[in-house]
Image (cartoon, rainbow, N blue to C red):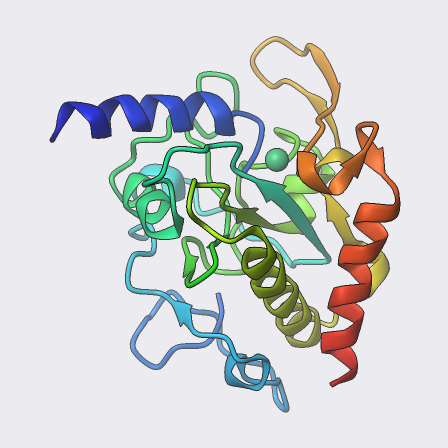
Length: 228
Ligand SMILES: [Zn+2]
C-alpha cells in the first residue's frame, strides 16, 4: 500500500470518528424491496453495491439488525482529493476504519455519496456506528456520508444526496421530519461514558452549529424530489 494512502486512511479515521440495502439481484446482503417500492432509477440513482462490507467481517462482525426510521446525514470533513465515495468504500471493506470508542470496534455507515457515485456499505437492516455510539441514532437510522474531497462538486453531491434520501424515504416509509443531521443526536461515548454533546455535522449545512436556513433548503430539495 502506498504511503500516502496509509496517511489518508489515518486522516479519515480521525475525521470520521463519531460520524458514519437496497435491492440487488446479485447481492445476497441486499434487503428485498417492499411491494410497490420505487426503484433507484426513478430518482436517477445508481447504487453501487460492488464494495459492500463482507457479511460477518470487520464492521459487520456483529450484524445487529435495525428497522430504519430515520436518515442521518453526515459529511466526511475530508478535503483530500482522493477521498471520494469509492475510496471510503475500499477503506471499509478492508476494515481500516477502526474505533476504540464504540462498542463495535469500527466506524460504519450505510451510504457514501459524491458527485458521481453512491456506494452502499451496509444493508439497510443492519446497524451502523456513525451517529451516537449505542444511542437511538445508530439503532434507528441509516447513515449517509457526503464527500468533501477537493474537486468534487458540492452542489452535485447535495443533489445526489437529496435523490438518495427521497428514494430511501419512499422505500422505508420514512417521513421528512425524520431526515436529520448528525447534529440531531446527542453522543454519549461508549468507551468512557463521556457526554460529547451534539456534533456540528454536516458542518456546511448547519447555521451556528444547528439546523437553520441551510438545512431547511436541503430538506426542500428532498421535498422536490419526493413530489416528482
Ligand atoms: Zn457526522
